[in-house]
Image 1 (cartoon, rainbow, N blue to C red):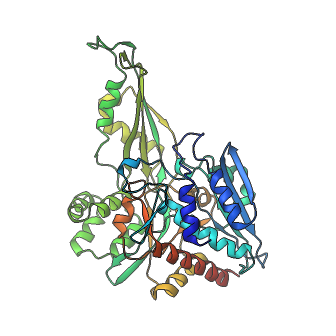
Image 2 (cartoon, one colour):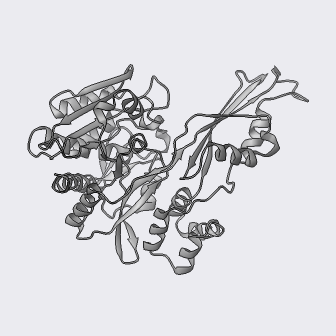
Image 3 (cartoon, rainbow, N blue to C red):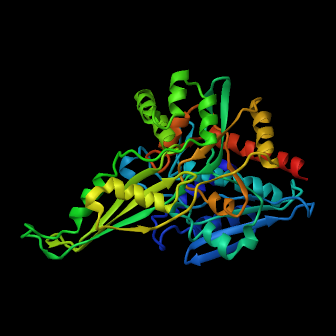
Length: 441
């Protein structure tokens, strides 16, 4: 079975994670991996059907560092009405594999499993241990997946080096093509905002104490509001190497002028401007609202779930302060309840894995122009990074889709990846492992 075949099967398994404990059904893909690899690994199941599976191939040199491949098996829900094809049929059309999870991250999952299989069969071996941990629940903060493994079964996954997501397409640079490598991510500071009221009959709303009133008024202040900016070294590096005019580059590095510069960029490339905003700002997105139990009853409680993402130096105290300020007086009586609190952590780049990625990219492209980038999303890498592991995400894509267009497909309609990109990414990761072995043995 090729990487392409495995990717299509993983899409068809429909391991949809809607955030509830009963969803996910990652057991389906754990079975697929067992069939492909010819043996069962160590299965960890914190809840029925919510399975992660770990395999290990011992290295030849006990003193050499271990490398962990950390893909996830679950995908986010989908609204089929917005798709041109069946989102779980894994159709191949116009040179692309279409389906939920095609880029997030089942393409990388399939590539990692195929390459791990070569090591498991003894076709090639690293000096240190090679671990594959295909995990559940990444799309709901990893509580039943990577978080559980690192807290309850660290012995299975502990490794100083990690390869996971996100792999991005190339970017045009001032002096040639840039190959992004994800070196860090923003931290989720998800927050529940809760209000209280007094129940009553919906036919007499005058002077009522409707719990939705203060909540909706407070949430209105969160949409499109200005938020704190952090200019990281990674951002400075990206701005310095992209094809930008000097004035735009200067303004993008100035916390007072960056929003104006992003507005100008959005005229021609809104997708890229959206990404640039996300990796330089605390982002705030109210995404879920719940209230009431019946259409003719005034609700006595209401709550919203707000997706907040933070950069280095931003903590819960700052998050709550920003939310209070933006909600204004409407939010004075509302509760702010943390749902998730993880810091933003980046990995350093003076190490054998970074150099191995450079070796592999140069081998396949003739260029060593690696560009460290930050993902605005949350990945399972944070559970290992906070324990001191170095974690990167990398892939190799053809030029049929731009960096900005690629970003729009995450959790969006018509998610797809080119067949050629699946093959190129598999070849790249195979070379990364070989080069890492040469540098770490």
